[in-house]
Length: 151
Image (cartoon, rainbow, N blue to C red; front, side, top):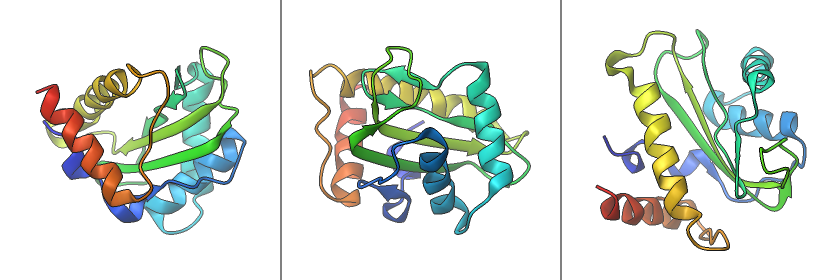
């Protein structure tokens, strides 16, 4: 399974403005839902209570299952300044991959996608600094190139 075909330019924001976890989750959810969805944000925050999805090295993968979506949904955000996301390494998060899926998704795409994003993040963090492109299209191209290397 490849991740890059699931990415859409209109769901990639490389200029996240919020600096707090809740605000950033709202920005990401708005890209998926087209509007504010407090229930989905609440579900994501409840998932965060189990343990931060800030995996370290400037990356977070907030995720949940929810009846509020009928298929796997993905949004990506990047904050140059960084976001306080309670990451495991206590450092600010810059790159966020939001993954939301219905409770019963065909082929268990949710878990496969989480695994694929984790593999991509390993490659992204091999360098000392995250180098994120300037446009959503360039970001998708970068992810595609990474996936071609890790097939």
